[in-house]
Image (cartoon, rainbow, N blue to C red; front, side, top):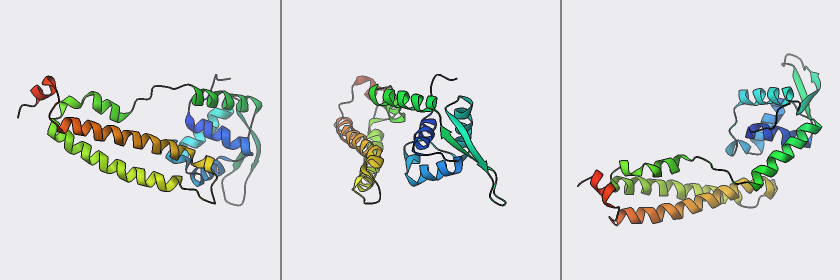
Length: 192
């Protein structure tokens, strides 16, 4: 048996099967209806691969297989005791232990001196516009809705907090670059 589930899609499958047994197609529909594909990378084919891996590792087990008419055979899976244990352990770790995540924007900042400062000001202005739109979208998503419990929107609140923090950082950084105080190295790479 495997030591854990490091794939976020695998954790979604385990979490949904904790609610009740389901077949992969139903899991995919539930994932979409709860908008989890906005937070967790999801492709239809990868869902079936993850289900196969979870079954191989003993975290889920087939409960029944049926066929309706011309539709393909559907296997309903249920969460096993070891699946429930690994789900709880992995989620506890994800919640409690901060991890280094390698973000594209952070990589761009590490290499920012390659671009001329005036261009960086323009590009950061474009990023601010995109962040402003994203923040408005996230604020709309986090508004209370009667058809969705607030806990199913919590990842949007987290994304909103991150976007607002990034917007604040980008404004401050853009102002610094725009002031012309970029240091000798950066200025030397791009003489006017």
